[in-house]
Amino acid sequence: MADVGDPAGGTRTVWPGVVALCLVQFVDVLGVTVMVTALPTMLSDLRASPDAASLISTGYAMFFAGLLLLGARLGDRFGHRRVIITGLAIFTVAAATGATATSVVVLTAARCLQGAAAAMSVPSALRLLTTITADGPQRERAIAGWSASGAAAGASGFVVGGAVTYLVGWRAVFWAYLPVAVLLAGAISRAVPPDRARDRSVRLSVLSVSTFTGAVMAFVVATTLLPQPGRTALGAGLLAVAVFLAGVFVVVDRRSAAPLLPRAVIGERPLRQGAAGGLLNTLTTSSVITLATLYLQNTRGHSSLVAGLMLLPFSLAVIAGSALAAPALARWPPQRLICAGLAIIAVFDAALIPAASSTWALPLCVAAGGAGIGLSSVAATRLGTSVPAAARGTASGIINTAAQLGTALGIAALLLVAALTTGIPEPGSPVPAAAWAAAALVSSTGAVIFGLKSVGPATASRPVTGDRETAPAGSNRQLPRS
Image 1 (tube, rainbow, N blue to C red):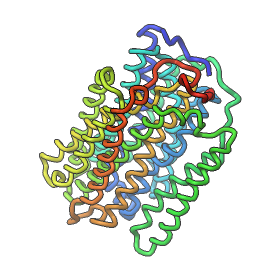
Image 2 (cartoon, rainbow, N blue to C red):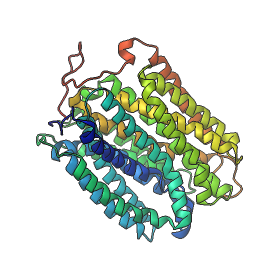
Image 3 (cartoon, rainbow, N blue to C red):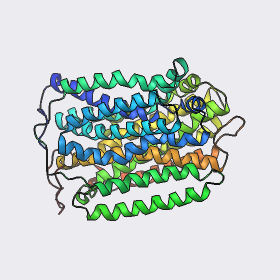
Image 4 (cartoon, rainbow, N blue to C red):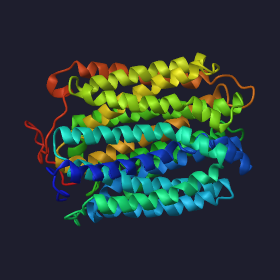
């Protein structure tokens, strides 16, 4: 695909487009967490079982993660700006459906459709952001803004959802998306130049997409059923289906003429490490915060507004951590910053066990977690996008897929651990210590692994920069056009 606009263009022409594209990221990622603090109220209004919490909270992230790689390919084939605007249109239809939902089934379907629409928009937005900005400081600042907007959106969703639910009602969250999406589509049309060329030769592997998304869906539904009396066998069966579909995906995608994960692209070490960092970031924070908001409302009896306010320091600290990451990347390799961020997250996950019952200690604890993910997410995105320009479209899809996959799988897994140990938070239930301890173990292990990578050879720890169209020197890989 040809570049959009003038990469060397002045600040006046580039930054309105960068801001608009970062807002696409903000709105779409906000949808992952904005309904979490509203969960108890929604379940009560729809007279649904607490077991439905996992499906409602993960449906969005499940389809977001499962279809992101397809979304990246759609942008390559039909034009990134066109795909973004189409995604926003579908997003508004899904929001209207959610606002008028009268059952858990309709509400979950609306959330899943919103996730699919977000999967169309986000990869194209990141691809255009790296295209309209010049290589060097300008792109560094744009990527830092992109990472900060995503991390801040995921974190602030808890506060926004809680406040709106308490003051107006949870349906207002869905209605608010309608004017926001329309205004954002207009901003993209004005500030982002159209694609000069589209690659009609790009093919779409329906079987790869189906098996990948099916594996994610089967895993999430399985974790919902496993702790339910009488449904354990069905949950175990679906878990086996998830493993089977994941294996089929690997085989099918490797043999596909249009793989979602081209070998030449995933062979790039910076991309693999950046994706791993993104997955660990959300796996050990989004899931922990989701469990925390259920504990605050169901066990401690706080309203959605109070729960959101208690989690507000997490959102503010994400922004601060992201701001610190940009200058830090000029001095240290991104692997070292990912290590530091995951280490801070590990402390947050573990400290939440004694702090959860304290009104003053919990906000301080979640602030540490926000700073950790802010620092680590910027470094992971920077590392993952340090690939040849021809591979950047696919790389953006993989990075975002990893982050959203971490959210979907993390929430499902931690709610399962809680259900099997202390129980899903309800009046009188204990602190979900086992689940938070499991998250701390995962994040601390990730910190150790990235710490070891950061002290390796310079060529392995420093990201590759520039707009290379071929593989790195010394490599025999040929990178496909994305």
